[in-house]
Amino acid sequence: MHLTTFFKNKIINNSFFKNKIIFVGVKSIKIDTYKNLLYLILLPEDHILSSFTSQRPLGLNIFSTDRLKLAYYNFPSNMSLIPFDSNMEIRLRQIVEILSREERNLVNNPAGLTRAADFLESCFEGLGMNVSRQTYQVGGLDCQNIEAVAQDFVGSHAPHIILGAHYDSSPGTTGADDNCSAVAILLETASFLIKNPTARRSIRFLAYTNEEPPHFTNETMGSYVHAKSCRDANHDITAMICLESLGYFTSEPDSQEMPFHFGIPQGAEAMMNSRSIDPTIGNFLTIVGDEASAAQLHLFDSCLQSDSLMPTLPLIMPDMRMSDHLCYWDQGYSALMLSDTALFRNPNYHRVSDLADTLNYPAMVSIVERLGPALEKFVSRPS
Image (tube, rainbow, N blue to C red; front, side):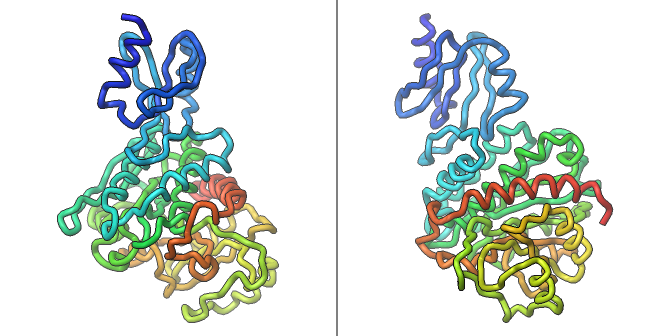
């Protein structure tokens, strides 16, 4: 059989490869489309696929047959068929655009929530990680937390940390900042840390479902289900770090409010002054913890590389129960939230206008470049 015929009949027409971008090893290089799929034909030398295997682009999977080897991106139906770029800024935007194509919630689009879970599972698998789903039902519908760990993960009963972000959107919005921005940063940070043979062994990566209303603070919240299962199984979690709304940064005056009704801790004003933080300008990161997480808060803050363009503001605020970290607090674990402050800065919060074009992607790159090395230090230091 001619190779082109083999490719079309045995590969493209195979349902296993539906909605996947195909990379095939044959004797020429070109980009083409067939049946609405994008595929890139590559030279057949083994080192090409070997390089994919050892330094695999985000979301890339490897498949072999007796006739040829190929690599593919797995994109759930109805999502953009675009290969991830080598430039991190473009890559972050691509992930946000893919996820924010539709709502992701049980209220308006449960199928979109499932497609997002499939996409995230594929991305983690593409990094060579062990991926599992924690499935539970809400109103007869399956809901999934996606968990990924390195092949040599130390195990849940050894000391480790969790880095997590919710992937659902509030009803009525596709949620680019809340929370596609944080999910994109979660994936990129996983891509960075998986290359570190020490740090990767001590980190679990979680993508949570059902953080948004009507599930927020209820037992149907994905992080509640996960945190409770960890406590029930006596998992040794040193700290959970919640990534929440991390894409909206601006230097415009009067672009930031402070959550005074949650109780600004004593010493916060002095901290802001020492770090040149203007509380009316939305260009800083907040790290929030409760009293029981104070040691982890200060350790994590010290591990983050200082940046005058995006300073960090660590705050002990036990009443700031606005994301997935609260479920770990309630189960007795130390937990922190890293955020752009969401509704206190972003005018698009929980609105239809929370779109990919409104985010600051250079700022998101800066977060990844600081967060990865910070976690390398964080997991290696005693609390």
